[in-house]
Length: 523
Image (cartoon, rainbow, N blue to C red; front, side, top):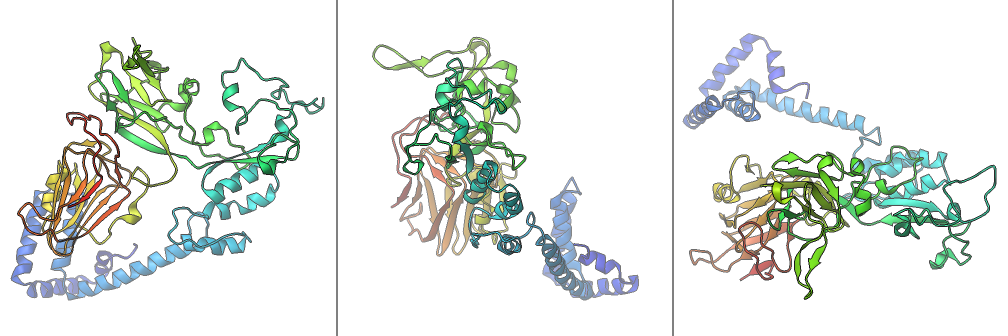
């Protein structure tokens, strides 16, 4: 804000400021003096005096030492700040790009956008639909507008196909379409993969059946709108699951899961979507174009011993299972000799025996239908804003257990800033009428590799909340008795945006594999 308390205070003559400081010193209690001395010692112990921590302590010291006049000015400054924020928001509300969500339908009214409804707590926004309303009208009736409208209304990736463009017909000599051959190009590797799909390039004979019955598509008046419910969700610097010294899986739980591409946003509304604009599994042949898919801010990146692997060191191939005559898995096919091999269909990668890594991390995208179960998507709205005692792991405490122990009596937040494995099984104890929130910071999704169950014990009206984490190998357990044989009086257990891995548990690091375990135990 332009007028904070210190700026207003400096506008006063020095005479009034000196008198105010003297009056403030007179009204200090012994507790205030002790607190000021403690804060001063903490400030002196900080090496970087320009850090946020040092600024916070200086603000606390100023608050405790200020006189009555400066205290009054702080109240005035706070109200000025509220007024300034209101003015700034009113200005932002003039534009669809920056307005508050509740203003979107009103701006939509100004441009006569139809079909708008107010959804205060919805995860999606109608902002793009209103912003593109004029573009819709200028290009009314074109495939590009239908595609953009479908994308804006549903929030899903979309592709519009004009089926007359794929008809095998005698072409008009003044309007030739060289790519629309009357016969299929069987030499192209992707011909059979795209037939009857949105990015089909093969010409078809006319189908006179009704498109409404999903029988006939390829006819002159027909248009198809294809939607993708599955979207691509990022995993950044995620530890790769280690099968042995040279074999890894992208999925950190050890699952064979396909890799998805990172959908590229259309720069112009006139551009029809291609395969790079929608979230789709990456095929082996498609990934051979490493320049398109591999690298920072792209669909895939491999870190070997914390160093990004160069595209020249990667080869794409089929790493499916090798079976013996009895049907038992004895290894993977096409193990590399001198390059790193990647199989995007199975989500596997392998290293040469002579160049086995000590640590492997990956950036990649997986497919899922919505934002749930934890991930790098925004979850800030679900955090408890009233808890201001936040301990960051591993920035301020090395382990989750150490951070939980530090706030047992006071309550607060343990916030994890990592996408890695955490090999620990915390014991949660919460004092009466306190709340502890164990959460992943926005943009992170850590995995707790448990050797047992997470036991949660609390006093009267105690609350434990978990947000944005994944668990493997154990359950969240609320025992009837605490470790001291006292009644467990925990009031609430809140679980949001978490994944507790179901089914048999694979070996991860030193944690051995085990049979399927319950996800939640109240006993």
